Image 1 (cartoon, helix red, strand yellow):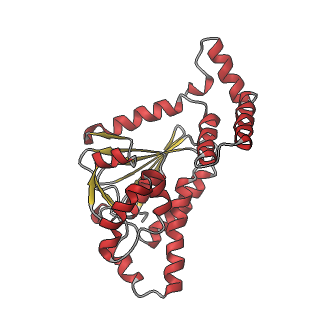
Image 2 (spheres, one colour; image 1 turned 90 degrees about the horizontal axis):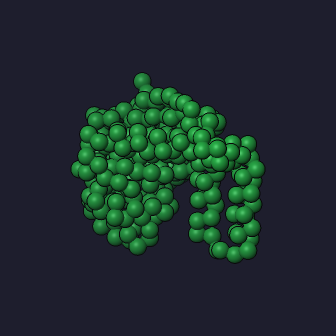
Image 3 (cartoon, one colour; image 1 turned 135 degrees about the horizontal axis):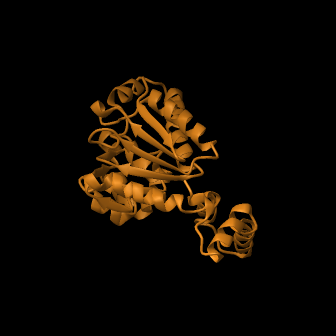
Length: 260
């Protein structure tokens, strides 16, 4: 029995972590299954977005305690290989070519924060809370650290990596981990409105915008970068989608990709 539910309709994949009895914590099997599934989704040209959420009252509590107990008996080499698999999951989610939305329906702890940080957009319910709680267990948030630091910045990470304290959805929003806070009953509606906006845009333009963000962030602004960004806009202007979009705009019509 799968530990998540995947539904795909009209170019949108919806993935629900389905272990509510343990607050959607993950173990080695779930990590492997999610990685394989996300890799498959990433290879598809027809997908426009992914919505990731949790079933029940939690988004994800991070690592399953039973799995962590088993890892305590692993050798250093076995722990290294195991940790690489979690890092690979985060990397695959972070680099999906289409828009990813974390619908944070409840608490996100440890690796659960990593999942949120790996998504392009995060919307949280107002009573959600977060914690990078690894230090409480004598551990560190190592494999999720590149993605969390990219989301909240090194200065905030200095505090929350070392205190392991809980922080609210409001604080998460202030730091940039989540973009918006909504009432629980409004979460699905807000996600649907975001999807409506995303699906109104050129599919290839959205993918190219995401790749652009990845490639120009934290890069020195020099002549090479200016030439590269100019090349990218030139290529998309003369692309089939770019031509169709510009033509529709000039004719005051809706582009054909909105007809779905």
